[in-house]
Amino acid sequence: MNDQRQEDDMRWLQVVREKEERRARRKRQVFVQKLLLSVFVIAIALAAVLFAVGVAEKNGTSKPENNANSTADTVTDTSAAGPDKNEAADQSQNPPENESDEPLTTADDQGNSQTVVSYKKSANSIYQYQENTRTLGKGILSSHAVLVDPDQQTILACKAETKRIVPASMTKVLTLLTAVEHLDESDLDKKFKMTVEITDFSYKNECSAAGFEIGEKITVRDLLYGTILPSGADAAMGLAEYVAGSQEAFVEMMNDKLSELGLSDTAHFTNCIGIYDEDHYCTVLDMAAIMNAAIDNELCKEVLSARTYTTSKTKKHPEGLLLSNWFLRRIEDKDTGGAVVGAKTGYVGEAGNCAVSFGIDEKERNYICVTADAPGSWKCIYDQVKIYKRFSKRK
Image (cartoon, rainbow, N blue to C red):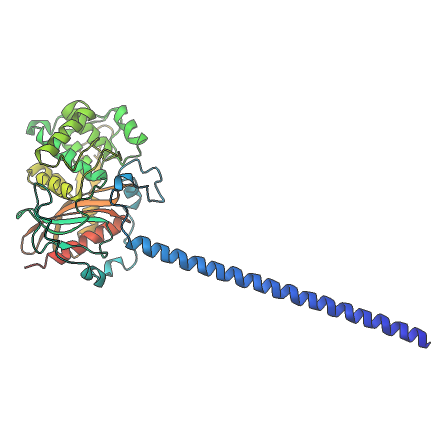
C-alpha cells in the first residue's frame, strides 16, 4: 500500500512538474511574441517619422536648377510626355482643405525676402533689376518664379529666374502670338478640317485636347481659343498647319519670334504644344517677355483673358464646344489685391505645375507673374495669389 501511494505521489509530482514546464514555456513564448510585436510597432513608427521628415524636406527644397534633365515627379503620369495631362483630371476638384486660409506671407518667406545682389544689372533685353527687387523665399513652393512690371520693364520679385525651365503648355502663348501675327482678320472665320494625323499625334503623346473630331471643320478663331483655354494640342497643331503648312515650319516661325524678342540666347522651342524635349526650354523671365508681347496684341489678349468660349456649331458638335480657362476660374475668387486678367498653365512631369498670368492691382498697375515647378495645380495657384497679394500693396 505504501509503495502504491509513493508511486502515485511520484506520478503526481511528475504531472505537476510537466505543467509548470509547459506554463514556463508558454510564458516565454508570450514574452517573445510581445517583444517582437513591440519591435514591429517601433519600426513602423520610426518609418512613419522618417517618411514625414523626408516629405517635409522635399517640400522645402527646390529641385535641380536644370529641370530639363530632371525625372518625372508625379504619381499620375510616369511618362510625362503630354503637356497638361494631369490638369483635366484635376479640373473639378476643390482646393485642399484649409488651403484658402493659409497666410499670404509666411514668416519664413519674409525672412528670405531680400534685395538682389548688386551685380545683377540686367536679366535679359526686356527686364531690369532694381535696388528693391526682392528674392522670393521658401514660402513660394514653385522652384522658379518672377513678378515683373511690364510698364516699367522692371523685376519686382524673383526666384531662380535665370535658370532653365521646361515651359510645358505655357509654350502655347508663343504659339498663339506667332499664329495671330501671321493671320489677317479675314482668316479668323475661315475653316480648317481636323485631320487624323493631328488627333493621332495628340493621342500618342498623351496631350490634352480641345475635343475636335476627325473631319470636323472648325474656324481659325475656334483654334485660337481651343489652343489656350483647354490647352488643346489638336487646336495648336491645327493653327500650325493652317499658318505654316506643318508644325516644323511653324516652329521655325516661333524661334524667329524668340530671336525678335531678344530671347534666343536663353530660349528655344521644338514644338508648338509644350511636349517635353531636351531642346525645348526657356526661363521664367523669357516667358514673362513672351506674355508681355502677347498682351500687347489685342486679339491675343482677348483670347488669354477669356474665362469661357463656345466654339462655332458644326455637324460633329451641333451646339458647339464649351471651353474653359480653369486657372482663371479658380483664381478669380482669391484675394490677389486686384484681378488676374489672363493666364496660361502648363504641366509635364519634368516641369511640375507652372503658369504665366497677367493682372492688375487696385491702383491699376500692371503685372506679369510666372511660376514653374510647383508640386500641384492648387499650389501653383496659391503661389501666384501670394505673389500678387504682397506686391499689390507696394507704394
